[in-house]
Image 1 (tube, rainbow, N blue to C red):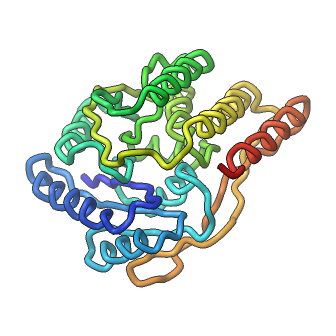
Image 2 (image 1 turned 60 degrees about the vertical axis):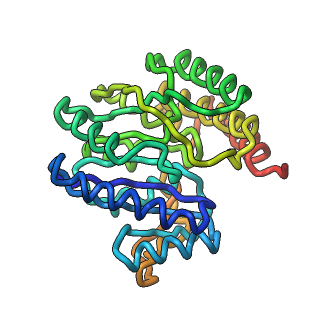
Image 3 (image 1 turned 90 degrees about the vertical axis):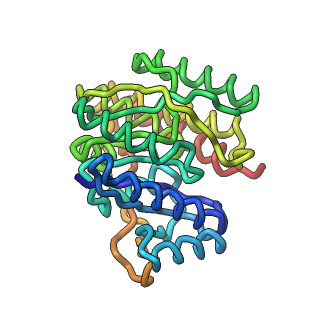
Length: 291
């Protein structure tokens, strides 16, 4: 069985090379024990020279397949554009700082296969977040449960495992969000489609000292995404998803175009059109305003 590990990459710098090389080596050592073959797929939508150089080294040495998107789109959009290039029977979504061990990844993939899960979700424990991030996290997760009744405590962990069926239906075909609320949207659509999902406690060891994303701004954009998602789940008559081509997908191993980059937009009509347009404008003001 093949397992694809999809990792969205931002401004990781040259340290990304050692981190991914170590992950690859550990997974190879574990492949016989767990009976899986692994591939690592990195995707970035930010031209950050040290990071791009690290990705090119990894690609040329066959450690990972590395894709570069020509248009800035966000974490969720990067994952969606990368999924068609993943060959795994199961898809692992993982943050670029590799906050969980290779052994944890392997054990939970095994759990997902034996339990026939469509989606396995990490519930982070032993996090080192500051007070503000913890308070915002509790508020956000409470709101998600109010809107969608998932029954989960942690919707935003950057580690999830999906079956190929779930990935094709949810990641590529159903999700709208291109930003940080993407992790939540995966769970919401899994629940709406009646898929089998489970949360598992995972020891979380972030390698980054501080997030580069202003927490209050991130929360506001994620709240806007949640409202749109709520409208999508209750108002399909007036809201429809559409894919738009916005750029190119470049494979960094030998620098060639392998596909077209897309984004997902919502076409609104009827009574929800004006509310949706207001949300879009507020989102742009908050997300792209200067710090």
